[in-house]
Length: 304
Image 1 (spheres, rainbow, N blue to C red):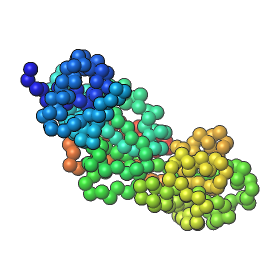
Image 2: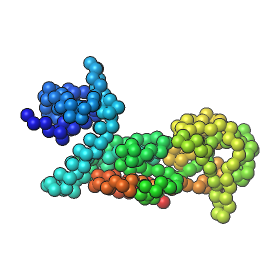
Image 3: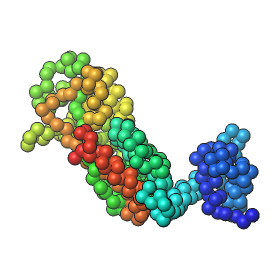
Image 4: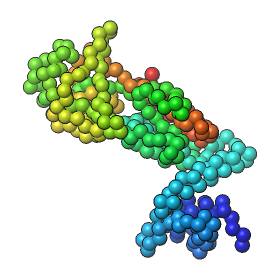
C-alpha cells in the first residue's frame, strides 16, 4: 500500500495527544498495527525517531515535539480549507493555541468557555495560563491576551479591555494601625509588591482621585512573582497589596479583605489581544478573538 503522509501525520499527532498507540487507533477507527506502521513509515521517510516507546507510555522525542507542532498546524489548516468548501461552511474548526495571564484565564475566560464551546463545537482550544510572556512565533501560539503596552513590532495588537486593581488588606491588619486618610499614610504600613516573573520588574501602582495622582514608591516588605501567592500573603495579614479586582472580588465579599482608600482608584492596565503579523488570521483564531473581545466587553470588571 502506498505511503500516505497526511494520514501518517494524523496518526502521529493523535498518538502524541493521547499518549498511546491503542487509544490513537481507537480514536481514528484503525487497527493498532496500521497506526504503528504509519508512524514507522513516517520516521523512515524523515530519517528521525519521533517517539519514545515504553510499556506504559508513548511520548515525543525532541524532534518529535518540534514535528508535532508543525504537523498539527498543517492539519488544522487543511481542516479549515476543507471546511471552507464543504456543506458545513461557516463552522470554524481546528485547534487554537492561546496564552493569557492567570487572572484572565481563571476569572474571565475559563468560566465563560461553555458558551464558546456551544458556539464553536469544532474548535479545539489549547489554553495556557501563566505570567510568562511567550514568543508566539517560536512557540507556535496563535494568539495571546496580554496586559500593558505591547511594543513588539511583529505583533498585531488589538486592545479589548482593562484589568482593574484594588488596594486591600485584612481588616485585622488595618485595625492595628491608625485610619488611612491619604495615600501618604500608606508609608506606615507594610507594602507587599508584585514582580513580573518574566522580567523581574516590580509592578508600579498608581492611585488617582480626580486630578490627584500618587505613586506607591515605598520599599516593599516582601515581593511575590505569583498572583496566587501574592493574594495569599495579603490574606495572611502580612501587609497591603494592589491585586487585580477579579482576584479580590470574593475575599472582599466574604470580609477576608477590605478595600483601602475607596475614594482613590488604582490605575488600570490595558488588556490586548495579539497575534503575529506574519500569520494568516484563520477563521478559527478569528472566532476565538472575537468571542474573547465580546466576553471582556460585557464584564463590568474588564470592559474599557
